Length: 257
Image 1 (cartoon, one colour):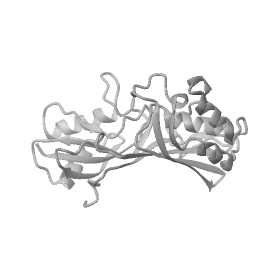
Image 2 (cartoon, one colour):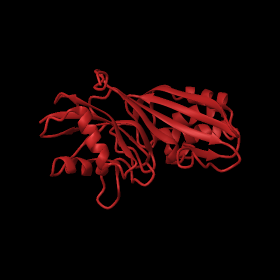
Image 3 (cartoon, helix red, strand yellow):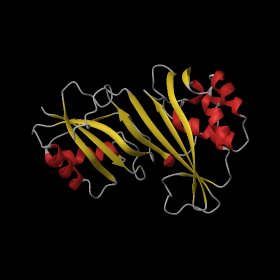
Image 4 (cartoon, one colour):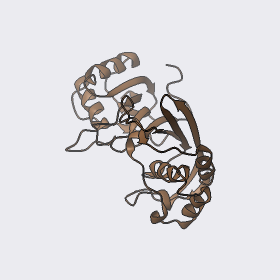
């Protein structure tokens, strides 16, 4: 059966997350329903990562197996036709070998978190960024973030319902970017690692926001990390500012498209 890699963009609002659920709309379910319009029957697609309710995708990657050997462009166009009423789009499609697996072949995942500081409520960016009213110190947040780089036991920054076998992960990048915008400031957190624990990025950002606000010192982040205790974590920030921004593979399936 021909296998295809799909690069997927989606707005997380209105979905109970990526993973298919029986009684709630999901991104996976929307795409599998669209696939069933092209090839009747049940479909199960595998993705590079499962995003939570309200989390967005800029470049999620999934793979699917079909009977027909579609031209990739025609497949993406057909899927987008059936997804037109959803906030989901196939932005690229490529044929891959049977050995390619969207999750297990990935060597790196990249996340972006957007936080906007301004007094007025968000309008155009509502639902697309975490809104706070107070200013933040980007340098202090970066100093706190630096304590998290490298290989650590991230129990403190792991959800109590996380199903990962081990809390030990290697964080390759956690970079804080400060951008002046009309009437406020946007802070972007660029996070990169091979894999992540459940709620790890949101736990990072919620903790670093406390550093930026002056409630924590940068060194408190290290003490929280060393505690290996979920109770030592700062607040977990809301999901609407989080985006799965990209996935890396040894051979990029989309490089020739």
